[in-house]
Length: 256
Length: 179
Image (cartoon, rainbow over all chains, first blue to last red; front, side, top):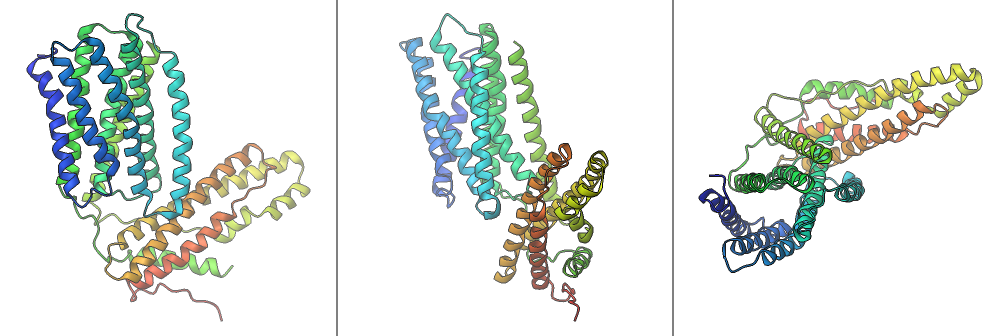
């Protein structure tokens, strides 16, 4: 079952992309389309790339070199788009909070720079596969991109949790889906780029990656289509005991 | 191989963290009705005294250097405890402000926005002040600039009072100024 070009293989490669295409169409038609331009671009271009790569894989006349060139083009287009999506989500997260917007952006830039430097060092230590440079370099670039992506996603979740910022539902879902996918991909590409595993193991990792991507797309669907629970009661006053404590504090503060 | 293991461990830990955040977020949503944030009292006068540069200067000249470092570290530890409480109070008020955002009254919404922003400023200042305290603990002669925490606390107090008044005029959220 876990073999290249099996039914499951074909399903896991094609189905999430068709679902993502449908997701993109639904999002484009909704009132949220203006808010998530980068994610829309990512969804459509990612689908085009994945389906082109799929065709390049299954059509016998396409050479292996051409297949890897398609992978490279996709990597060069998709990777910056993913960082734009993360920036877009962060911007939506900070929009209602001008008090910490500048701090957040500065911290994100600084942390991103550190992540890129660390990822470059990690890439320099990758175990080279001397047979095919085009493949080895693609693996290392994948590892680098997912390393930085995972780090930025952790930063966003950490920043929001530290300041108790309220997420809008779709932004949270997008970041969660990206997070799941990037963690799994980071782990598999790290093993592939650093240990040169056997072909059978690489195939299993391809299944794992495609499965994780499928989960991500389903997650995005869930957060787009299923309405969130209303967590707050409009106009509910703070509890009286809190106000009493605060009142005492105010009096003490002003009587200094 | 070692590098691969490190990266895999990082990825697994991150995945667990992300899933945990998701679960705790949905749990918070489901029990938001009965969970109310807590405010801890702060002795502002004692806090002001602890971060007073003149007081530190006075101690520096009065005490032998070894004794000064010991006393100053004790004062810094106490200041750090106050700053942590101020940060937690700020978070509690941010939560209250976010709850009030759903109100229909535009004045209440505006007050809630103000409270949230002041709360976040205090949280930010408290974090920076804590870092300075830790630096000063290693080097007790360093001056401790924690006054932004006090200033933010004052701003936050006004915002909290305004929101409290708007949301529930029956509850006496007012300041009894001495004549």
